[in-house]
Amino acid sequence: MAKADKPSYQVLAGELDDILAELQQSDLDVDVAVKKYERGLELIKELEKYLSTAENRVTELKAKFSE
Image (cartoon, rainbow, N blue to C red):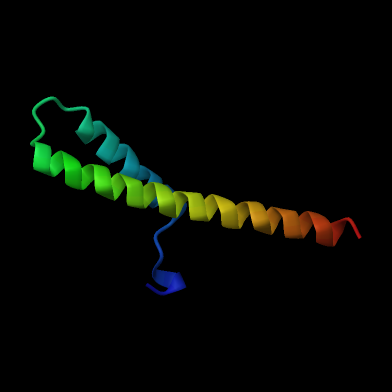
């Protein structure tokens, strides 16, 4: 996926919130729940990448402007 096509942090976090709400339903089929759980883990990994990138960028900016 090209960088321009990459969903925003807010979109990914919203999808994760939706999955969490669905997983709390007691009538959710087990197979569906497993697929949603897997997708949730993928989203968490992507969100962690976003946060790591943002943290690195802030560190770079701080170093640049403290010179």
